[in-house]
Image (tube, rainbow, N blue to C red; front, side, top):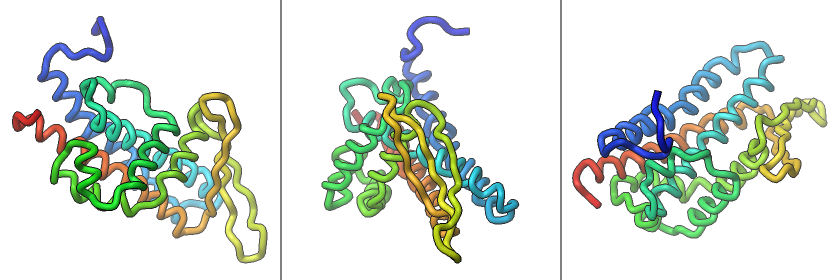
Length: 218
């Protein structure tokens, strides 16, 4: 059992251990879950698809919030990034602020400069500025700010159409929020792909910071 400030670290070694665990386990977890959901969702009974798609959406929202946590921790180092990452996950407004910054970037170097991670984060920086869907995920994150959203599957509106997943919840102020997706194969796969992208970008940005610190960079 430990005591004292939960945001504190006994020494630099403990801080590095936390950062490495955050990069290798905490950030990776949503992708592991999403990959396993995608493996089974198209083989499962059709009645399970709505629940499994909702789980996939839940993991994508966690992934984008953790990407946001890494983004803001690296962009503003007035406090040690490790301390920031120990805090509760960012809210949807923070995700939208990241989306706004990304939307203004025209080149990868603007992103790596903003984050202070150098060329080690260039690949992810190039990918994130072409993604274009961060604001949608900010709205999805808003649905989950007060707890797990309710899940409803709505039948197709027209013959040959696809059912829709409604994800309904409340933001941190108690305002009702909702997003929806069609339960069409490409839409479901896109959720899994987005989760993987968020995880990859977050891990690459944080790993670049960790490696720079380990190499003695400021």
